[in-house]
Image (cartoon, rainbow, N blue to C red):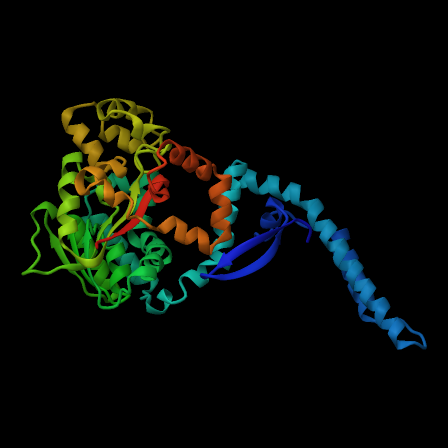
Length: 426
């Protein structure tokens, strides 16, 4: 294969060298969209058959050499045929998936990452995964539809269908393959005491508990905790799930935790609640333990991928953001937040607005921001060259460098699309 050498780190300090010939190499490894021409297939078949028959002659070495040359020629011809077909297959696949070039590269990188590198990342954690059959999962799906906060008609919308699939099983799959291996890399989860702020419907709770962690999950929504309890029962794990506001929660006795995790919850708090919750959580962590923030959309990022799906949305003042919400492609959310009012302003914040290092500076002091050396995205990119390629092709790396240039004293983990960070308490 022609191309430039690419040095790739896999599993720590282990390195391999590969040849990277560009985007078309990745596309070729996907399930075929078009068909290879029958002529090229026949040519390869004929060449291969002829190559397996030694050429008659008195000298056996000459026959073997001719056989090798024939095999080599067949392989070269196959490579030429494959490359000629790349552009057509590329266009067909992009048309089918309705993707532009950058999105296509990200899609391919995700597929290849799942096939080649994800098994190495989840190798140890996957031994503890609990499995259920389709019938049990179907019952849990119905339990969510009947008991969670959304009205019945919401589940019939496109967004509702995606949410239901995520709440049922997809989020658990994602947590197992990303957050759990990352946390396990710096905190052994077996017998660790974990306080999960915003346990939600229990996907992350199950992912932590099946690894042997002792999880206490807090959520303000009774409906969410009911779903979380059903999910824990379904997967056969134990967790202490509590319906309570974290700002009013008091651990039993002098209990301190090995980690306090804000799992996709900090962005749903009002600004004043964030400034109270962060120092409160910090005091509940034992020395050497971790404050972990997961899936908090970054206020500094140009694209609001979390709530509105609009560019620069998190940069707007809250009142203006509420009015601008009318242009969001999420029709069900637009209807919910119309017309603009004080009540809907709070509702918008409950759906989730961006977080940045500024809250941490105010709540815990500016020195805390420099203590961040553990980042989920860095962890994943170091273990998967496809994630690394997608990070550059998507333009995320370039924008992160722009942010870093504007605030050179702030560590890199604060300049990702989402804040997935861990801060160790001295």
